[in-house]
Length: 531
Image 1: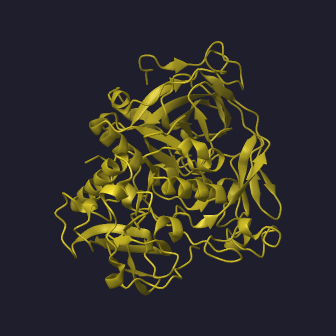
Image 2: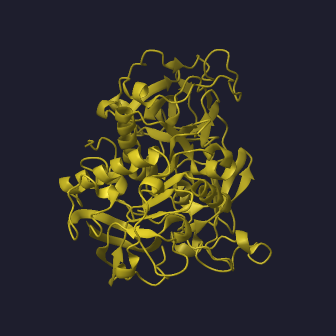
Image 3: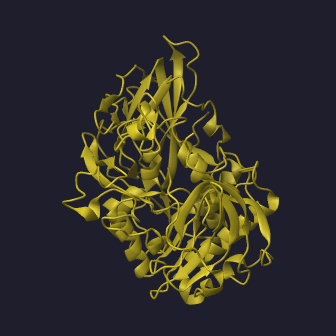
């Protein structure tokens, strides 16, 4: 089992050193390694990720030192890319009251429990206070129209999920502004062939990003739904620590998977969900695509990419709940392609609902062109907030091998705060096998949460946990106020079974789904709505 070194929380919608040997350091002007011009990309690219060798490197548990909530805005920043390939530079836009700051890149992995390894550190870089963010009327889009602070080189950086820590050096003009902040960046793989691909759900991070006073849920003087943003921009920092949603919903899954991959020689690849939209060819030949914890916001192309991968033999896993729930589309920003994310959440408000109803941004399950999420995930989102034990329904499933679980056995607190359920209508794929069927009460209504596995003619298997707490169950101590040791051990064993089978090829060939939904008596199709 893994210790909960990173921030581990209870799930749900988040509203609420020395350089190691070989680490790169920028030159004194803050513009990257010698020979790298600001804003340019080095042509060199690292070879395919060797997970075993990478995680044998010494980690640095100090990667999270000094991070706080960001309420004082002492330092904050964002990158002009959500993901790059190794060797491609990116720009950091930083605002700080400090005279200088330093940026340090940490790759997230297992690293014998340290969970982070320092890859690069900048020289001290001049700090300045950037202008206040601008707000676009009517749609309430927040944009930080800042000047770039430094260019970060990535030559030799291994593929993976990274946190860039911004540290203020010498505070001026604001007492007590000492907290560090994160900027997340993905160093994506250049090929996913024969690999298990881990997806960073950047579109969901951005949807819940309230920096500047608006996200896709609320905003304005009353911070209410009516005044929410309809369009959000990646051209601004993330709120809170700068990486709250990554740490809450994805980090423990990545750490667990890297440990397992190092032990068993699995090949991993990394991408963002924006890559599902922009670069569908990247996923050809992947053994599996894994979404990690809260992957709610999907474009048409994202869905098409994953559906095509499934139908050509790539296994799919949804380790969270409420996946593929919101329909989005993109526009370009002054900083780059597809950096503006659109979701009106109401067909009547969306200007394209009459001219192009297939791209109107109400929830996927609703008219004018309904395509419910369970067509892809197997399960339908139902309700939040909720808390329940995970109750085993089919202990004969290969996913539960080695757990010694019995039918009706409950694992404490593993279901919540949002959950999914198998529904009885033509949108549910068959054969589908319920792995759990957990009694749950949400908003005074009694129901069930289901984990499910289905298979398709290509041989691909698709698994959904049906709960948002799975990620923090993969780290000992995660969600400690909700679950106990046996729940952690159970989730970790099931996940190990899943990843090992999915990495071997189309899982449905060795493990066809045993449809058991006739006796399950699943619910009718209409689930609850997320606020």
